[in-house]
Image (cartoon, rainbow, N blue to C red; front, side, top):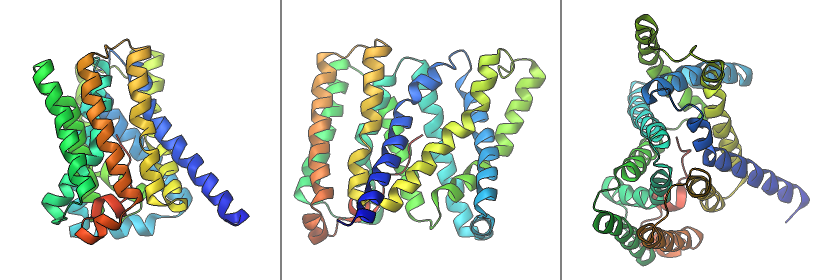
Length: 313
């Protein structure tokens, strides 16, 4: 490996680690906003992200690329759909953090790669290799353990995994830079978010100016949302996708640690069994990524072998 290549790889790993650890620390940020209803947090996240990304796109002189996306009806429709999926994902996640379900939210992002594989089968007609089939079966067993032993469906985890998986599926069909695409997505949602904030302000129920802490945290949501995405894009440009795919587990691992050790959420025997199945599934999934020969022979490389993990939340 040449010095330049080594430096590029180290920089890529640094960018990926910064992005995934930032997403992993999101529970701390959103827990600091406890007391602000999740829909209001979401509305501010959308509008401040749009404002910050306008500055970024202007600084990078990427408006021709953004306008190209907007002028294509097909692309615009796809980004409108992905905007619905990612905003739903954000809303569920924000609610989960402040309702004390960070552990279940982390499960959702552990399960997400397996959901992505299934979406490839259903929508892209990809076929699964033996390791991939075993990974899907183990992940399903993990969810079933929670349903049977806990007596309820882990809807937060499933909602996060499915909405994020669908977001990645739609964005896979759109040739758009991560930053450009996100600007179009939040730009489409911004009028609704601004109208909602206006209703709250008129009714006197807005929390934006209730305290200095809420004001600063909500205003910072644009930077908090966009910067990890920019780091992620830089990582993907410098690393093999399989390397990025392995590093993505820093995010849910950090969330799991925060849920148990900082927020005091109970990690029971049932959780140990369920997460054990999920982690075994991810080990098989990672093998399929690092050794794609079987997937390629079965025609199933698709979302597993070619697509970079999409940024969460």
